[in-house]
Amino acid sequence: ALALLPVVRESEDRGGWACWAPLLTLPAWVVSAFGLALALEGHGATPLLDGLATVNRYSWEGSPAGNLFSHFARDESASFACAVAFVVWLAHRRRLGCGSREPWVDLIGFASVGAVASLAQFVARDYGHYGLLGLPGIIVAASLTYAHVLRPRWGEGPRWATLAAPFALAAVLLGWPSVDPGSLSLWRAGAMDANALAQPWFLRPEVADRLHQLKGSGVVAEGESVYVFPPDHNSVHYLLATRSAAPTGYSFLVAPLEDIAWQDCDAVVVLDAQHGHPDGQPLQLPPRARLLSELVQHGFEPRLALSFITVYRRPQ
Image 1: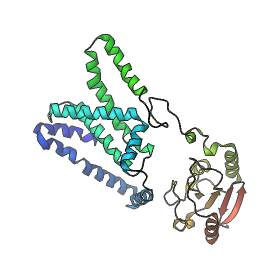
Image 2: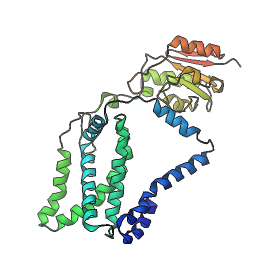
Image 3: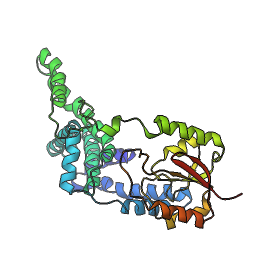
Image 4: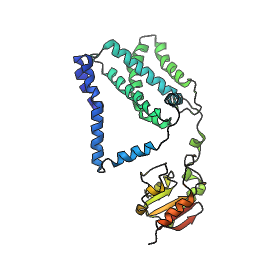
């Protein structure tokens, strides 16, 4: 998309809606590039359909307006920077028109419109990491706004004002009142979620000791296809150098037991559901008795028991 910006620039001399025509072709280019990349993977539409099916299993949380407000409150400085850049772009487009011959104006518009478009994700739920998609656009738009709009104007005033202006802007961002006590703002140290400061699950002494014993037991070999239950303990695969046998690989959603390809599993690692969860939020798990029944039905037998870890394999 960025490579097509020169095409947009060359077409602006025509004026009117004609200058927007190349920009409107961007969705077609994006879809074409995505389709080509998908075809090169060699699995057809299966990865796309699996991804859409996983997203479809997510529950809707809150309202679109409430989710957006929570997101803005989480990092007011980024929201402020994006809003200023967007207003600057609209003002310059209105004043200079299509034939402005000011590339930085188009870049601000491209970046800020992309950042605003990414807010569509928050219609269904308010997950903070969704904001990462729009963050590059915000950084580009804010940087260009500072370089081409704010800094030149500060340079026209007294020297003391030129030196003080950046500090004044930083003070605004630093002192912006936070509605969300767990704000993720990079400009201000806010209260952190307790889970963010907790020791990672796999580094807890009792967990690390059991995982080390499991790795040294030889019951599970490197490179084997292993299903870990609950499936949100993906660190087990990293520490054991195994491959996930979950239907969609990495997952923090529990697939129906009947959908798991047990025949492709070399081993099954079952963790005590009460022992703890990586993010402190327990999953909705099927009854343990049903899981054990499913394992027995597919020929798995317990091969190793280490406190809260049990490994199942088929007889050789």
